[in-house]
Image 1 (cartoon, rainbow, N blue to C red):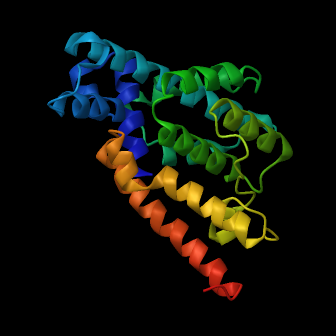
Image 2: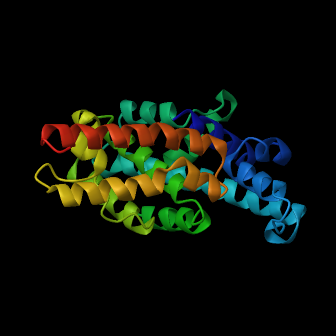
Image 3: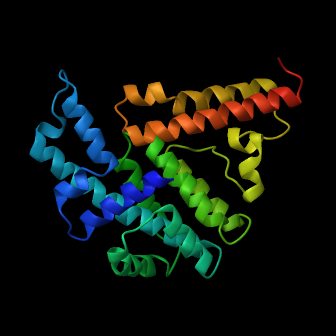
Amino acid sequence: MAIWGKIFGAMVGFGLGHSLMGVVLGVAVGHWIDRSFARPTARPLFGGTAAALREAARRQQIFTESVVTLAAKLAKADGPVTRVEVDAFKALFVLPPGQMGAIADLWDRARETPDGFEAAARQLAECFAFAPPLLAEVLNALNRVALADGPLHPAEEAFLARVAEIFGLAGRRFHHDERDAADPYALLGVARGADMAEIKAAWRRLSRENHPDALAAKGMPQDYIAIATKKMAEINAAYDRIRTERGEH
């Protein structure tokens, strides 16, 4: 998840008034724009460089506000926000030390109630509709924040399911405790009693979504491609483990 420190820190930097050029050079949206301009046959995004940078800035600010809001409201969903949930958020989204005060203010406002999270999720989904892997990683990170203080609470599960629906990722299964992370069935998002046809279909879907070549063809940044390469290895290992356990060849 090191990518999230880079993305989130840079986006926070913009949101709090730091240099736009410094931000754009360090974020996923910036990479996306750079790759588009780097392709000789590509048409300039949003009408030209200046317009592209303005759009990147808008996306960065939306990302910052939406992710902080979602994480804070998720932490509140099962009751009082705990220190371990705050620490989990900081670990997943490594923030520059100088920004902690402003982020803390935003977090404190958002954590007063879990209500209103859908608006933040919709804003993020609309802004980053071009990047499903980014939305999927936000969802995974939120799941990890929810697990920080123990097994997934029903209120947290409902929250995550609704965010997944808004992100266009409905039907995704979430880790309910830390043991799930090592479970090949949980990794593939299928029930332990699923038949091989369902398991194979899940494996194929995840392979399509995370295949590095496919993401590269879509112009996704190298950071995401590196994550996808690792995730593909985990997906294949989980599938192979299930096949071995079931005597499939």
